[in-house]
Image (cartoon, rainbow, N blue to C red; front, side, top):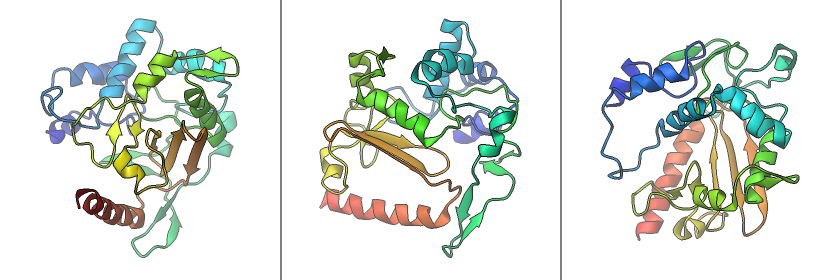
Length: 254
């Protein structure tokens, strides 16, 4: 089924710089679902659909909505879908780790599936995905996570209600198997079982980005953590992660 989406060039928000979110979401609406709603959990394009709904309801493009309703109130002045020319010299290099463990600088392009991005995020693009594509600094995103830790408020400005944050960071998939943890509305939720095997407390929430960025929020310890590794297509880490998942599954099921 994923081949149907890919054939129609409906993929994550990377590699579609010069297209429009609305066009892709309208096309997505004509295609069959992977499964019936509620029958299974699939990490997919749901946030992209929400991004298009935001555009319709607000009457603004998603990048403008983010800028006026999130980034400017929080002081996130270094977060963009596409970097302005005056800030492009601050873009850090991306590296990859080969199978032999050697760290090498990635070439001047990035592949997302079969899509080749020659100038991301330096393009003056028009595709603003709800679920991918933002470039930021570790400080900017730490501010966003602090807002989530503060139950929707930062520096005297409230962006989300406490109940909205509660719902976003609560298990929303019930008993559906998502793997090691559960999933809220946009965040992975640490469960009791995985908390016994990992240094994260039950109820912590987080996720990661395309270039091996990882983040988490631990409300009980009042801690925000971020790791920005700037790695792409890390075969060594992928292999180690697969081995770790096997060990954890065995420990949970024993």
